[in-house]
Length: 378
Ligand SMILES: Cc1cc2nc3c(=O)[nH]c(=O)nc-3n(C[C@H](O)[C@H](O)[C@H](O)COP(=O)(O)OP(=O)(O)OC[C@H]3O[C@@H](n4cnc5c(N)ncnc54)[C@H](O)[C@@H]3O)c2cc1C
Image 1 (cartoon, rainbow, N blue to C red):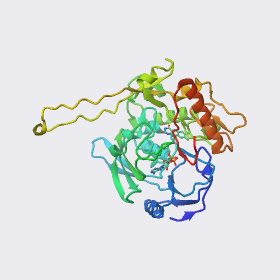
Image 2: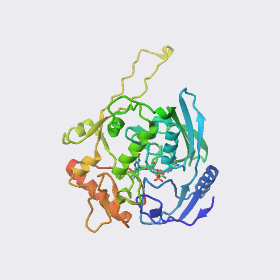
Image 3: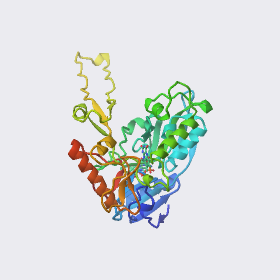
Image 4: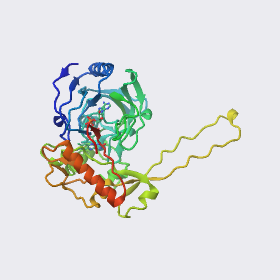
């Protein structure tokens, strides 16, 4: 796994910022990836892995460490233990949308609504990617990963990854470290075999997006085609000819707040209930039961609030730019911060801070960035 001449991260990330790191390695096979990680870890170097660079905001100063580019490829189709289902095991560096296209072609349902999300398969569980009501956690069975603390490769079930709304134990959230420092080597999904007939769309969000009224089955290829068209119109499909796509998708996350906080927002602000993560029922074997019944956990209802609404109603509209800045909000989507050509990370960070400050002063809420920040402060 040769060290390669470091390439500026501006050329490898969709926000198009970032200097060349100190060192860079390319890993084209799973073994090269494992060897590169173990080698870097044994030297105690700073490091991070790079997939498609579509969820990364890199700073203007060179990263003082090693960036390992994951370039592994390959899809294996496997048997599923469940009737009417099939599995795919996919190498981490494989292009996500290429995988979606493959599953649609094979008549395998479960990720078709996530057509057009940029990036790699290995990064998808890191923030539990999702779109139009589908999330990878619905079909993810397990990942093969390597932990920094032990250097060991393990197969880890999806239930151990702490998957939640755009998060997992592997994600590096702004202002904190990941709970588990590990790199995904491959991902296994369990999908429904539906063939060409497709299937009835259950989720309300997807039905609405596709304009479906009846209960008819919809071919997967049609779902994919329509989703790609919708995403293209919103500037959420990478396109070198569309400057609104030179971003990282949604730069700010929808906020999850207590119901009491949401009640103080104007009633027009869109909001959705968040399913509480209820603890599984506690089973006390009869022979151990001493008459004490533990109290039920108190669940404080939470609500997801539209960050796009907060931004636009803080007086910042689509297409907004600070004077003389080359960073701007997409003309199609209030949540997408974009590089309008040659913007530095400093310019994008200035815009992000301006938006955070406006929203905070209007509504008292602090927007959190969704991409991983490396060498940038907000
Ligand atoms: C136009 C556009 C639209 C988008 N739309 C959506 C959307 O609809 N839904 C959505 O959820 N996201 C969306 N995104 C965000 C992004 O596409 C996803 O988060 C994607 O999964 C990132 O993949 P990547 O390979 O580019 O990750 P990178 O940007 O390369 O990396 C992101 C983070 O994951 C880590 N990482 C990468 N690979 C691995 C690995 N194998 N193991 C462990 N850590 C790893 C990196 O170190 C980094 O911290 C969008 C982005 C853009 C630019």
